Image (tube, rainbow, N blue to C red; front, top):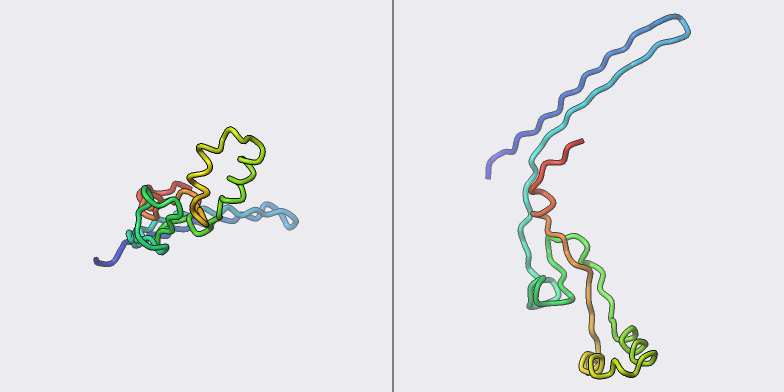
Length: 115
């Protein structure tokens, strides 16, 4: 991959109205295209963002924190015993770590921000 273009234009204008009053106007336009990180490997082992509830992608944002939901599942079962047929199969695992849905770096870099 070759060099990416980088543009940075700045305009400045100042005016002295009197000895006690002056003003300045600044305007800037910056545009660049950085490298796109595209590694979607799961650092927590096998699985993808669609198959692993504890997915932690290399080039993703928001998936770094994971939490064991077993205490939450136990609390649901204690509050409403009728949820046992749904909750018990999940509690069969000693831990059930989940993470937030990840946003891929490619998705955030695909659009050009307008400032």
